[in-house]
Length: 424
Length: 216
Image 1: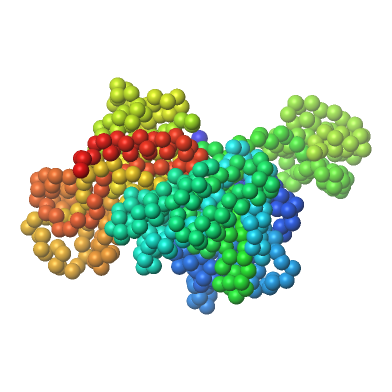
Image 2: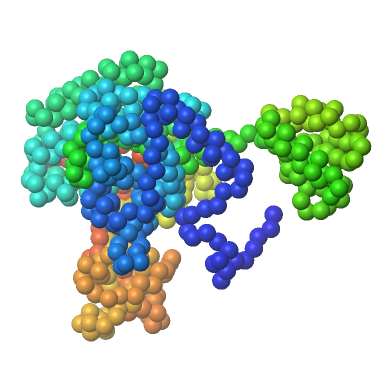
């Protein structure tokens, strides 16, 4: 192992929180993304892309003022404030509201995109990461929520994630508790404590504010309100009708999920508090293995599109692709593919062979650095190729780069050999 | 029930944190080998991890430890993504802004840039920002009280328990910046995926706290 001192050589490094991917990892990432893409497509979700940059005001309008300090901001050439998108739901809401309108509902849209957080305080602290997700726009009911949860579960299964769990909560429950027991002016502070997961501070503050005993207890019990008895307990603890309605909705969703997703490990978790303020109903998160942070999150956001001028209900989720990728163990890649080596006189013949092999799906790499047969074979072996072929006027030599075996014969026989030996 | 890993801090909070784990039946009392950083717990698969206070929350945030015991001062300084569930009451101390006795009035009144030595750069920065004062934060990792004596800083923001160290170094408290006691923190995913074990542990700790707190 070699260590280097790159002090003062900033140009050699990506910025903090950003990273490169070498071919092996980039290929695994692409394969995983392809899996998600195909899964989403089978459920009728069509891919959209949006620009990496949005106006700062677009993102704040969608995700709330609180998002600003987490953004990666820059100044555009006209002096306007821009931001790198911190998630994809707001850009897609803007896209739907301004480009699609309310015909042919519901829209099933999906994306695979890089997102950016300037001040990322959670988990791995990557400032650029990849999300894959879906948005189901224009469908208000519980069935729509159940569909996206079931699709999230299927995507996890397709990705080979084992032992994952989904927790489902409802922001309406907390919202109603707060609305019922706490003065409007104090609600933001309580929400902030909840968001920071500071239940010691929360207990003190609720006492100081002299909040109703039942409501205060319900709020403080949030982190423990999960599993089969959670709904029962929540019903007991909450006196108000709207909060009950939220719990009712959760109950309906759980029942729907028995049909939509009979094998998923799903449980109620009223303690889920998501990090964007556009959520209005059901919210959910997914966890797996020993990873200390969620690998997916989502929920219903019925007022977000209205902020861009088109009142449509919507629901969706995002998968943390990099975290999911990091959980799998990379399988060693078996050598495959062919190196084609010719002298200039035989170049056309060699390239013709390469073309035919590629059209059959065989990786064919041509020696372009003008090296000798021996050198070229050595390099090809290091690059993970399996076979090498030296094509000459009257005969062709095929070498197995890993056993060293060689065979010499006519070109058409050799070509068949290459196709079978190194093909997919 | 899954095994869980509890991180406790070396140093000041260690004896009481360890004793608490013993009282709730998580560890046997006789395995305190000061050199070991991982101790087996009574339940198979469970363990105790002894971490430097400044690192402890990293273990819990990433899920390498499911539960941690740590001072509120570290929670305030590091703003980690963990659940803070219980106040244990012990390890009480205060974070204060202190300056040399002979310059006590002058430092604040001067209105100029104040140099502050501290182990809590984020807390200190926020405190002075809220006062509308320009400060230069000098981050240190130990013996902060020395900084004003050798002219490195005009004042300090540091933990105070008895006030002894301040007095010995000719410093006086100007303002209280925060209060701290030991807290129980839990990883946000462990809280869900190991819910029965962790809930049981929280209940046991709650009982112990009830018993040890003075009656009505």
